[in-house]
Length: 129
Length: 174
Image 1 (cartoon, helix red, strand yellow):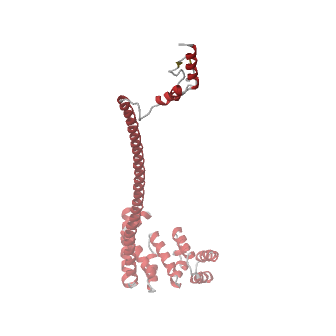
Image 2: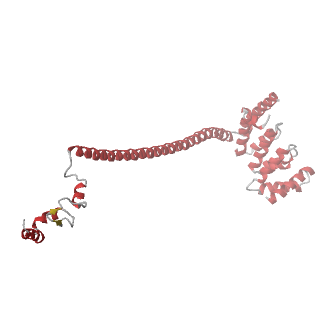
């Protein structure tokens, strides 16, 4: 199913609207719902939208999901999802929280080296932007 | 007639010019007064200036009825020609005015059509904007409504259901 078919799909529009609503929902539980359902979806487009929504929330917990978790956000196996998440991070007006999460991920001993390397690269990009 | 009488007559002719004054006055011939032995030249051998004047076309004198008719016809034709010429000019002027009006009307029509095109384009833009904004507002209203719901108890089931339906659609397409 290509993007044009997605745009015309009623269920895709519904999923998109739900993700958008969770982006602006003030409840901190929204991050848990996005992480549990959105980031684990088999559909790349849904994972992409979910990662962008988590970055837009610009909260410690939401940014931690897309930066520090293996296979999610910037560490997603899909290049489109990873690059889209990085692009959203670079587009943030206030990058303070994102930089804190990146530094924490890089300096932490509990993460994989691959996750740390990705965090280091994104931090370098954000410092230049 | 004796010689004396002849001399008297000659002298009378020479010195008494009253007899020939009238002839002199009538003619422009400077030699008209001259005569030889009573042979007064009654006919002017030179072209008379008076006759010249008389020969000139005059509308007041010495015109026959036929000539008058001819002249009047000629003058009438001139007058007719003038009126016809005037009418021709008038028709040309009116034609020019009509052409000018036609061009102006055409220009106005084109301008009106152009304005109609612009107004139609504007109407299209407004119409399309209203329709699209209606759907966008509908989507925004739905998102705003869901953003006020509880994520765990309300949104999560909806999210799971919609995602399952989408995945089912993808399987059907594949």
